[in-house]
Image 1: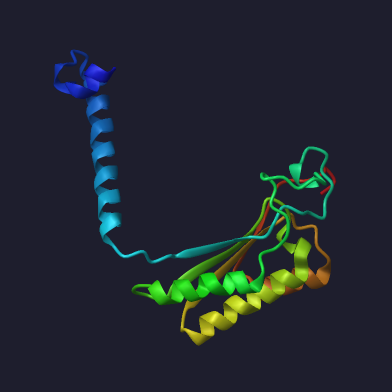
Image 2: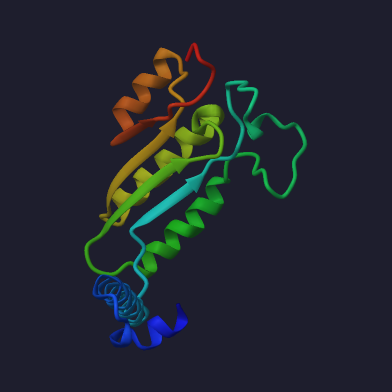
Amino acid sequence: LIESFKYPNQIIDKSLQKTILSIINIARSAINKWEHKKQVPFSPECLTIHVGSECNLTCSYCYSRLKETNNKILKGFPKNEDIKVILDYIQKIKQGKQALTVVFHGSGEPTFHWTELVNSHNLVTDFAKRYDFEIFTYVATNGSLDENKTEWLARNMNLIGISCDGPQAI
């Protein structure tokens, strides 16, 4: 196999030779794209706010139900001060068009920490207004919410993803 990649023109089977040459060309293209990216100033397009692993469901198979905290499970919602530090950093280095996608996503349910979700969304929205950023917001939720929360999400998020997860009844 290694010899085939070193000397693809010596492969007798033309179909295999064509496949190997295609893989080599795709790999070279990927290398060129990454080399180009290294030359372009960092300009983030998306901020994913990991909102923790807590959840309002009790699915028997889910790790978010674990009570003990270990290195693999992230509990809690990030503090607004931490989100602000990242937003300030993004504002300082952002190049070109001022657009940013903000994703509220977790290994649990983003709306579990409702107050923190609303406050961080307000922080992001204020940031966008202050620095003339266009923002697109997305939340991934299990959809097991009361009517007030559902209405708030519909008014304030550009896109709501509903996970196909949870107990059968949900």
